[in-house]
Every structure is written in C-alpha cells, then in structure tokens.
Image 1 (cartoon, rainbow, N blue to C red):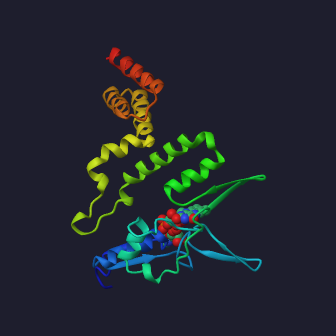
Image 2: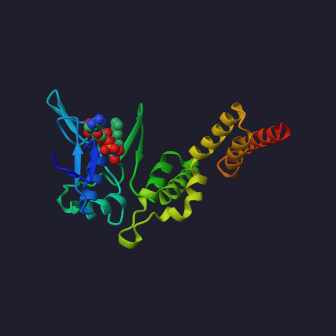
Image 3: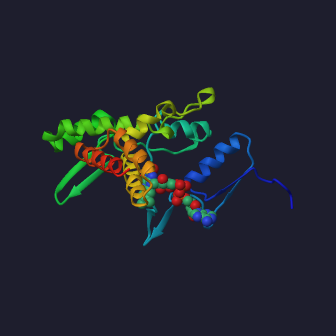
Amino acid sequence: MQENRYDIVIIGAGLGGLISAALLSKEGYKVCVLEKNKQIGGCLQSFGFDGKLFESAVHYIGSLDKGQTLYSIFNYLGIIDTLALIRLDFDCFDEIRFGQQSYRMAQGHEHFIDTLSASFPKEHNAIRAYVGEMRHVCEHFPMYNLRIGSELKYKAFTDASEIIRINPMYYDAYRIAGDEYSKEGKKDSALLSYKKALTLEIATEGERENIAEKIKRINRSR
Ligand SMILES: Cc1cc2nc3c(=O)[nH]c(=O)nc-3n(C[C@H](O)[C@H](O)[C@H](O)COP(=O)(O)OP(=O)(O)OC[C@H]3O[C@@H](n4cnc5c(N)ncnc54)[C@H](O)[C@@H]3O)c2cc1C
C-alpha cells in the first residue's frame, strides 16, 4: 500500500467537509473526503415526493454580497461565478404567520428594523437594540471575520475577552464548573471558576450576588 497517500482525511461530504477539503486542496494538501451516503451534500440536498421537489434542510444561504463571508469563501474557491444564485425578496425573505397575522423579515439591517417595527411599533427600540447586539456578536465571531494572506487571522483573536463577555455559554460554563468543584471539595478550583464567572458582564445582578455569596462561603470554610 502506498504510504502517505493523503495528508488529510475528512469524514463527511457535507458543506463543511467539502469546503474544508477545497480550501486545504488549494493550499496544496492531498485530501480525501469519505462519505457514508450515496449522495454528497449532507444537509444540502433535495428529494422528490408525490411529484414535488423538497429541500432536506438548507433552503437558502446568506452573506453572498461582495465582501460578505460566503461570497469571500466561494470567491476564494473560484466558484462564485458558476453559482446560479437568485436573490430572495428584499422586502420579505421569510414570512412568519400566526393565523391571519403575518410578519415579514426583510433584508438589510435598517430595512429589517423598519419592516418588523411596522408590525410592532412600540418595540422599535428593542428591535433596534436586538439587531445592534446581533451585529456586535457577528463582528466578534471569528469565522465571520476571515482575512486573506498575511492578514489571515481572526479579527476577534486579539479580542478574545470580548467574545467571552458576550457569550452566555462561558458564564454558564464557569458557574457550573464552580458548583461541580464545590461538590467535589475542590475549593481552589471552585473559587477560580466562580471568580471567572463574575468577570463576565453577562451575569445579572442577582446572579452575581449569588456567586459572590458562594465565594464567601468557600472562603469562610477554608
Ligand atoms: C432543518 C435544517 C434546515 C437548515 N436550513 C438552513 C438554511 O436554510 N440555510 C443555511 O445556511 N443553513 C441551514 N441549515 C444548516 C446547514 O444545514 C448546516 O449548517 C450545514 O449543512 C452543515 O454542514 P456540515 O458539513 O457540517 O454537516 P452535514 O451537512 O450534516 O454533513 C455531514 C455529512 O457527513 C456524513 N457523515 C456523517 N457521519 C459519517 C461517517 N461516519 N462516515 C462518513 N460520512 C459521514 C453525512 O452523511 C453528511 O453527508 C439547516 C439545517 C437543518 C437541520
């Protein structure tokens, strides 16, 4: 058997596997993609039923304007011009219906805010705040900030604390770790975890007081 036939073996020919394989091949690696199903594509597939065509999962993709994430990746892979893309309705790419009531999701930040605010006029500020927070999160999400060549590093890399600050998962992880260490009697580790949880601004005042109390309790018991 030939040694070192492949540098990398990727299991699964979904979008993730295929794009990773294409990127690695472009970088000169010999890549093998293994797929267990008869058809490649993973969740991005279609099937026929009763004479009609359905998508299995992916029904649309976003960030395809110049400079946006998927555009940049597909452009880098050299396939952007070969894709038969059709832009979704600018005023309504998704419509949510409850009985007779219908709510439209529009494209573009301001257009999205204006369109949804027309349905919920009193919530205009909250909708704007929500969109602002979403933008903030996306700006700090490493994979949404890819750079090419010498700049090929995450914008957010230098700002890891910011990702942690806005991600409730980290707060929960530290808080739960603190509780687990406490149960196991590992006081130093528990203190460290609780203190880290306290540094995250995501915690509410009540939660912070609760953790501060736990820290005091551990300190008293030492
Ligand atoms: C219901 C639904 C709707 C969605 N709608 C959208 C949408 O509209 N727009 C959008 O952008 N995203 C959408 N998504 C998300 C999108 O489908 C995923 O982000 C994307 O498909 C993930 O790609 P993947 O390669 O990581 O995984 P998958 O697409 O799940 O591919 C994994 C592949 O690995 C293969 N595999 C698994 N185990 C093995 C093994 N042991 N050996 C060999 N092969 C293996 C599988 O057969 C599969 O082909 C949707 C997801 C779901 C579930």
